[in-house]
Image 1: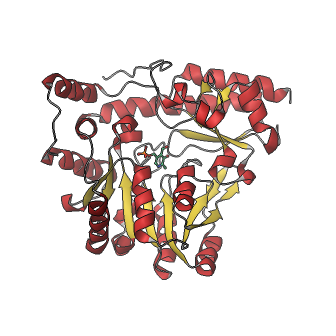
Image 2 (image 1 turned 60 degrees about the vertical axis):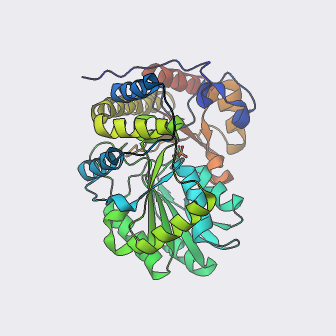
Image 3 (image 1 turned 30 degrees about the vertical axis):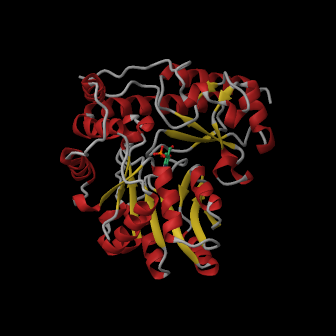
Length: 388
Ligand SMILES: Cc1ncc(COP(=O)(O)O)c(C=O)c1O
């Protein structure tokens, strides 16, 4: 059985522990933010990279057939999705992928809709490209989130929305959208001819009885959609900058090819491909260990907060390793940073980053770390929030 190895990553040039100044204005905070893991990668990945490193030759890389096959097999076995090799394209990260797609599928000034609170680079992709950002807030019912279909359609109609960026599963609220929910929202997109970018980077981090439904399972909407996947969250390979763009529709694929050929970004680094292939071929057992640890961390956090800060609302973790917690019963939005960062000395993702001040009483905690790091987090929160 593959053993999960926690690594103290301080002083390794990692963003999470060593690169806090950009977002927090200081270093040295207890790092529970950026979505990568404090675990060593699967041994199959390390072995494959070692073999390549030891070859000593790092010239231009021809992507092997086995790379594509490893991902095709993974999707079929884990998500019941049948992908053809010719649908697969490359982007150096999912964020780059959806930035390009915003440019490809819309014109400046056109409207793009998202379900807030949402992974903040979605908002940046729209704003950085001078498109109009339309936010349809999810409905929160005691910490459980749902799509507001009425508002979603109303805004699409009124604002002449051209593109929807879907987060599935949803970061930060941990929802694994049910098939019926996706069907409803895709039907609205069909009715108004809205393109769909479906960011499914968290598709393999699913807990309990929940089941991820890949967007491309819906054959009837394939002409509207591009699916984005990656081994980076699943196998902790974000530094490899290797992600996968899946386009089933021929016309959309042609658009993508014209766009990427024009920008001459057709492939990635050998290291990224090699790591991804090894992970998809042999990383399943490692992933099970990781998921076990994440869920144990979640249950600990939920139970301890229920004892120590019973009014904190912990959103159920259906998927992702990111836990969304509302501290509003203890601190007003304008005091959250002062207490959580300055007093507790925690680096967490702050709620307002995900779409505005109305989410400001929330924090997002990364659970892909040791139980000890989660214990530290809960204890400092309990200590300083009680005294506010
Ligand atoms: C929904 C979502 N998309 C994309 C990313 C990052 O993708 P990449 O590092 O491949 O650009 C993240 C990372 O947290 C994420 O949560």
